[in-house]
Image 1 (tube, rainbow, N blue to C red):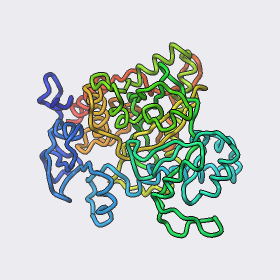
Image 2 (tube, rainbow, N blue to C red):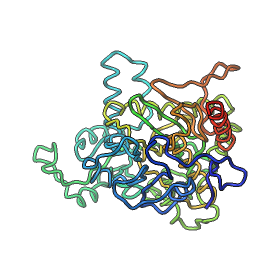
Image 3 (cartoon, helix red, strand yellow):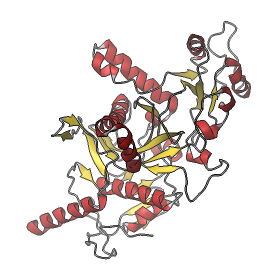
Image 4 (spheres, one colour):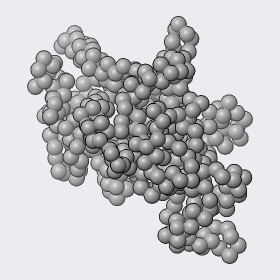
Length: 439
């Protein structure tokens, strides 16, 4: 595997001291714990850190959300220890709770007569939680005869359990499978036996490229919720369906048309592993600029950045902030044919397994830059930078704005050229010179 660019074993790379400056009583490499055997393991090893199997004696841990749920409350962490999830991360990443928090924020802003701010929360589809909201959903369903809706189980990923429908009779199998039965008065279910789903108005007019549907995977890093501190990664990718898009009764059950999840599309007839179903975000942005012009696409990508910010603000007060915790979120965004972005979901455990060399390079860069920002070695002296590797700081107790002086428009670096290698070398030179001056 590759060597870290700040690692002395990397040809021509500067030699950063491999000591933990946050723990002056101990020298030696950082100790890490992870059960994953994919890109994250390569990243942690490439930084000259040492793996440990200890449940508690480590400096950094990259673990799954199940560990957080089962063990976190019973573990005492030392000041220096870092772990990759917040305690109640699910407030943002569970489909039903995400919608609950977005709607609550919108209602609060309206109640406080902050109408302009409330109007910004228009980026999620009309959504109901079933079976709890079944009565409300049926009333809304009847108002839109012939419209298409999509059902998603709240606790599954990779497209599992998702299906489309345009008749109430088409969800009868879901009700049978979950033993769902309403009370005699037709209101709330007798017992919480049903698997909880969210049902959403299906986005019937997605922007298409080559006649195919796609969505975007965007990476956001939160290092603190108090103050809220958010970084957005410049690179990402678009995921395409393998079949041409059409919304008809005959294609209703065809996941290769309607779902863009890579796990689904890999099973599509004619899928070519060498080609895959992903396209780099920068390539997509350049293509869209050629179609719609730079100004319109700059506005689109800034709107996507705003979705990240507003969604995090919606959960800021309910997430339990902890100095030991950080979170790398995977945002799934869809764009309609009016160039309006829509938030589909937020993932607490975005895939860090690569399916191609380009995918590996992207995920390696994301994860490596996460730990450069977290800086467990203390190499950056707790300074806050607007850019670290491929990440740009977009919010720190308030928005961090980039103003295009020529056009006087706010812009986002999302989808722009990722000059992470040059930026990391610049950071190294800056801090090497500072240390030389103080030694």
